Length: 292
Image (cartoon, rainbow, N blue to C red; front, side, top):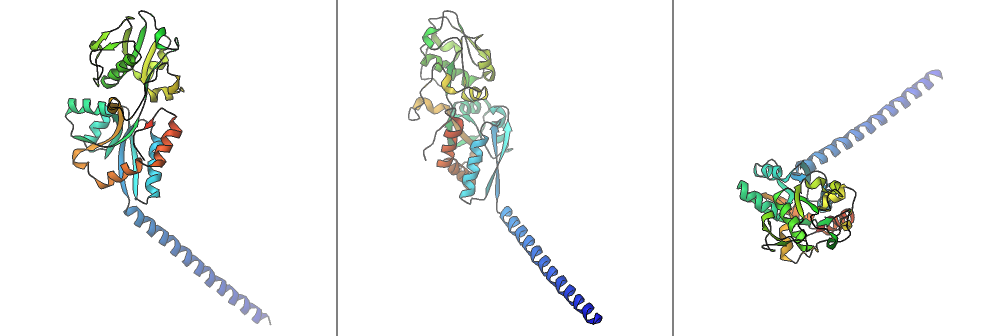
């Protein structure tokens, strides 16, 4: 009897071992199969590197990636942040990034003219308001004779800031339609404002030492403010040709302007999902400059 019980236990043990072995084989097959599918998917995925400024556009590119995934495009976006657009264009021209999204038309035009880059625009992104801010006054007409006003110290944004002051009727320009006017183009300054060029990132922090300051929307948001805190807002009608120079863009090398992979990324950017993300997250600091 004891021998039969021992034989039964051994038989059950063998069956359990066989069953466990089958389970292990099935699990291994599942893991190998999943790994194979992952590798096959990875092998078919194209990575594109995008040059950007800082991290302010991260939410936008996250939405672009979501749209690409929804469309099963098998394109992976990798962002490469820079501190200044001048380095982004250099990296693009040197093919260190596939394309960039870090500037507007006016900046690109000036940079290409200076450095002779062979770059092309492959898509519009958004426009960021540039407005007049003050802690001392609530409207431009309150500025006093000899007040100091801060504007950005880089060429394209300096010219744009002068146009904001002209729009606020504080100064007059020789050619109001010029894209990048210079300080010497100021032909009317009835309140004898002292217009000083400073780092745009610090302009809001200089108020109220300065009676007013004109700066980019991203710096306003970084300072915890709203673009609607401005005492003078420039209207941004995208149908108005005067606003075209300040629309931000996606830029690549001329020989890659028809790259079908890049075209798919631009198409995903120009989706309703991305437009809604820009509107919801940036609350007026960025306005979509494309139709969906």
